[in-house]
Length: 354
Image: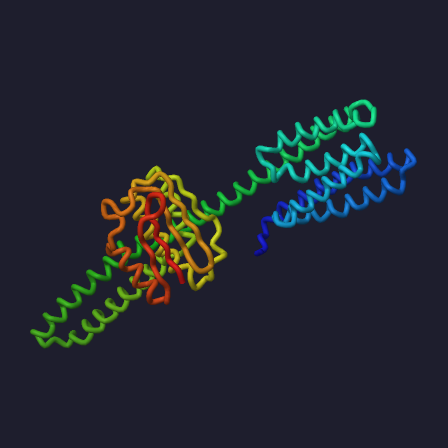
């Protein structure tokens, strides 16, 4: 799994909050000592804290494969602790629900309700009153952690939106410079070239000594025009990130729901331009021809796929126009293949594999 710096930027806040939750196992341990159950109580609390620490690390690292088994062990330790520390075991359940609340999303309130029900009913098994204090602590603690996690998600989405706006602004500025170079300086150099060519023809007829100078002017103007065109081409280079950003705006303007990746670091730098051409061709066809309601772009290190739910090959979507033919040439030159055809159950799919 690749490291994402943002995980640790937001993760340290999670660590601080989750470390604060250790006060609940500490309460359980203190009460176990006071009630004469020091050895079993402290062993349970110690094991719980170790597994809890592993679960926190996996949650911050976004590793669901290891996180949920750790949560299962925590729940098992909570069940074992019930007959040992009785109502105080609800504090351990509070910790379990708090660490899982960010991953439960809309199920978090249901989990809180279930935990509160356990806090009320479980003590009745050994003839004690409901654990009201522990239950109230459970409800408020888990809800606070859930709200905190939602704030982290909102901040992360804001950072991603800022990055996308910055990319769009950068692309717009590059296009503006390219347009200005082409429209202003390119036009002037073209005029110089034409006039120099005309002057050279006149000088040839008149055997003027200015012939050499005019020829030099023409040569310099042609070279300058070539340099400007090369610069414009460089400003208008295709990038995968730029095409995804432009494609998102294009689909939004076309009324198509876009499901596009926000990161392109899974693709090697040498392949990003080619994948950018594929995304440009695919999303342009979706916006122009597909009459789709949804479009999905999937990117892996070796392939990119554009899929929509539109009308498929009807209306020229599936025909090999200039854009698709040009894409096939680029991909073939890179040693890859292009697949374009109807998708199941409906729509169209463009897939480039290297």
